Amino acid sequence: MRERRTATKRRYLVCPPEYFEVRYAINPWMTSEEPVDSALALRQWETLVSVYRELGHDVEMMTPVAGLPDMVFAANSALVLGGRVFGAHFLAPERRPESGHYRAWFESAGFEVGTPAHICEGEGDFTPVGWLLLAGTGFRTLPQAHQEAQEFFGVPTVGLRLVDPLFYHLDTALFALDDNNVAYYPGAFSPGSQRVLKSLFPDAVIATAQDAKCFGLNSLSDGRHVVIAQDAAGLIAALTDRGYRPVPVDLSEFRKAGGGVKCCTQEIRTQ
Ligand code: ARG
Image (cartoon, rainbow, N blue to C red; front, side, top):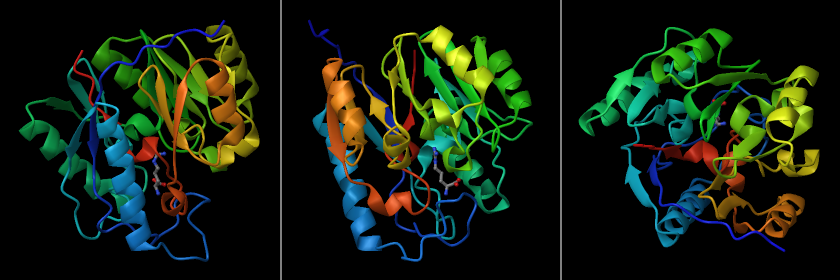
């Protein structure tokens, strides 16, 4: 019998793609011959936001800044747990100015913001799953930042090594389904990290390379509904089978910059 899944209301922070474009290449996706269709990108992003609202979640908006084309990827700006914000320290010089703008937003919203000393790209590489914090490294966030996050939040932090440049952030290869389980693509991880994931989550939903390549793992679950890239057909079927409700969306324009649903969304966890 299929398990009945329960949704919990979430609070998200997003940033309109007003200045979104592909102007530099800091991951292998950013080489598309085709330029970004700005009008389409805006429509796709607006649909994403209305999906969140229809699901009953709160959505807050950041003001975009000219000259920061990747600022739409709000997930990278911080990790927010228990109402405390661990900010970002971007690897790419092009993205560094984003962190000050996000810090200012969090401070004006009343949050205390910690600044990492080491390279650290927020929820791009940090995924909380219940009482654990999964932390990616290999391309962006450094293991020293995992240690910093563990000290900052006091949450057991499990480092995972990413090995495929197509999956340069943890959130391109894994997402939390609820407080106990995840979906992931094993091929994105080192053999040792694959074993860690297998022992922590023996019942995980395993995605194929094909689903991962269409950003199917860059998804957002509220415990029941999973907002997911519409092309990730295999994963959509597997999630349905496990009792989740996939909500497919099309973010094709953002894929040109190496981003998807989760990248565009920062979760504000106040508990
Ligand atoms: N162009 C951006 C970068 O490479 C994309 C970030 C996507 N965000 C994410 N959470 N994976 O930094």
